[in-house]
Image (cartoon, rainbow, N blue to C red):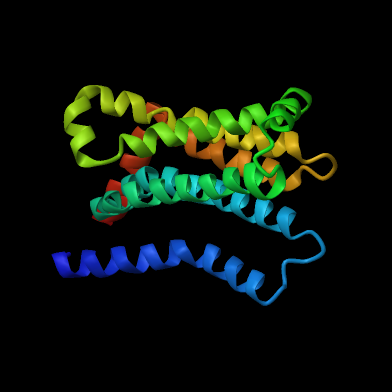
Length: 205
């Protein structure tokens, strides 16, 4: 694949990743966020954080299955979009929901442990976003990969935050948790060997 094609694909992926927030802003502009706009924004940004995390974590298994190494070129961008939507989710909470009332936020954290779990996930994603530039990759060396494996506990905490937050029907949170577990299983060496074997057989057939 030529450099021009990769650039065009990156632009397409970038625009697609911006589509959820663009549609959310359009709904806000048209006053279509429902009876509780803050809850709608919070839910939407939280869901898209999980979706972006799932897509980012799916890159490596897809690369193994298809042999398309070009997929790895989109992983950092998608990871940064995970942080972008997590930041919007966090900002919605401290600004639109709590109005930067720090004493009340502390009280809310004490009363609702799921807030702590979500905040921990956000801090991990923040550290990964800060260290994502190429200069940081060179500076950290081998430690960069070790640090960026923290995306796995971040995804787990994000799923736990969602499960803990929902009080009644937890089918949707469990769906994301199931996707996360599947993506983790695909990273096991035994499973990876089988995937590579199956993909090589499929290519040679």
